[in-house]
Image (cartoon, rainbow, N blue to C red; front, side):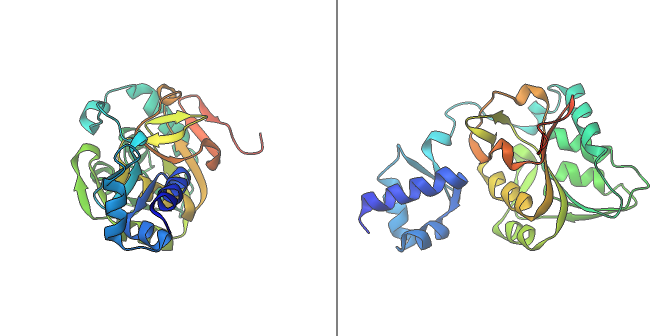
Length: 241
């Protein structure tokens, strides 16, 4: 396959999934990982290689960054209300996934003390809350620690999620846009969010309304991939409505 053909195929794949591991790109293109690296290096305006993952250069921000400490006080009341609406969907004895981010930290706090749940997470701030819940069985996914989001990332975590049965996935986002889809700040979150959504029976996007119309660095889904969107106003955009 010629180089230009490889670049077109890779660009098409990234339109569908936003981020791709180097070894998966090599398998898709039928070439070595070194060849993929060379193709990417020769096309800096089209692709970027970040820690074992390939992303579209257009999806990498030039300036704005995210840290959980800076974000935690923004729209705190709206986040608490959105998490309260999400918490009302929890059912005793289910297995749920709680994403990273300040909104879903609030969801973890609102789990009733007498509710029995298995909760899968990959964020230290969420885990710190869950470990104090007497009836929660916590599964903390590990890997490389990412301070900006207080979370972990690894290929093993993604594979673990793919093997699990999850009743409900509660997913956070930095931006929600009808055209550009649902986006987050950190590329390492993309594969984890996607794996959790794929393994879940029900998928809920939990965001405050300030996220609408915003687009962040990494796209991980479309809005209609969720059963509903939960904001401080409750559930909106439920399927079938």
